[in-house]
Amino acid sequence: MVRSGTFCPLPWSTLAVQPYGVSLCCASKADLRQGQEALFDTFNGARVRAIRQQLLDGEWPVECKDCETKEAGGFVSNRQQWSTGPIYRGVMERAAEIDAEAGKIVFLELAGDNLCNLKCRMCRPQYSSRWQEDVPALRRSAGLLGEWFYEVRPPAEGLGLDPSSPALRSLRMLMLKGGEPMLNKGHLEFLRGLAAGGRARNMTLRMTTNGTIVPAGFLEVMREFEKVELGVSIDGVDPLFQYIRSGRFTAADVKRNLDTLRNASMFISVTTAFQIYNMLSYDRLIEEFRPWTRFFSTQFVTSWGLGAGAAPEPLREEAIATLERIPRAGLADFTCERLDLLVKYLRAGRYDPKEWRQFKRLTLELDRIRRESIFDVAPGIGAYLRQE
Image (tube, rainbow, N blue to C red; front, top):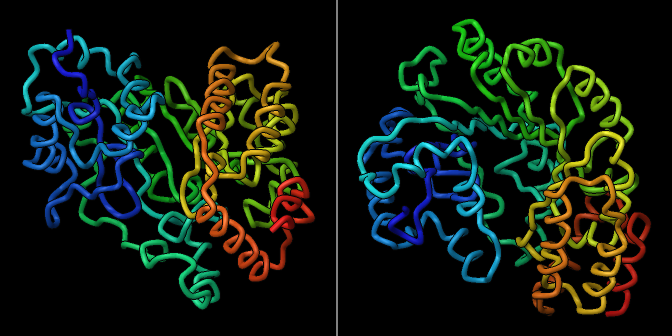
């Protein structure tokens, strides 16, 4: 039995290498490294041990603010989802007598750099090298975004990511992220090292990719893993897809790559960053990509004015009606649960004039810089912008 309502298995079993450093997970933004210590020293270092102790004592560490906020608002947090995952069963079974000392890494999340071929509107320069193209022009719009938005911390060095390291003997799941992970040659070499050492055959490989490219080297080495799960980030159908992603790729390009990946017997799911831009068209996205998967997931965008929960009430009501019309037959139970969660999220929302003004200003400014138009690609959203 877990002795604390805040207990989370991740600090005892997981580490995330972000483009800027090392964190507990994707939801925690604090860099845990002390100086230039190695990755595995960080995992069992003083700071992580302190986090473990706080969780055991029923306290929320500052590094876990995202989960604390979600649970306080009545939403399911990452902590709650992960606690039921099979990969963490061993930690959960030992939770009653576990202490704050050393754990074993069973899940490694690896981003490493921000190299990317897209500059998605809900992203920022820290996570996309291409986003930096727009920074000089966007900076001239005084007061639009804080300096935190433009900050790009250099990739962490000296992590000692040796695929043959004894510290990875317990590794059962590897998640590759980015930037765009398929552009990262370091990722490819790490995968090859795991395969050469015979470790890949007992490991699940997860990858979050935008689906625009599938380099041959990646496809070959991914076949060496016991299981491959690909979360493909798709936020709309053309022309909204191109508008949000701001690249030369189309939804048709992604579909061709999905065919290649599906033919290689890889599990495919679609992950969408739910935001104002696509809140009226999520039904079209699901219908368009149903032939490739039954599994659709969502991440709520809440930053820089893009959060759908802060949109005007009539817009939220229209989005709710759209979500409720989506045919559920043939969709995975998980997908149906996520659709219900989206409806709950929108109903719990509240119009925030300040957030809406920021959304409008950022949208029109990026439209000017990128020579695009919200009124052309999402006229339903544009109609609400014209009302002011």
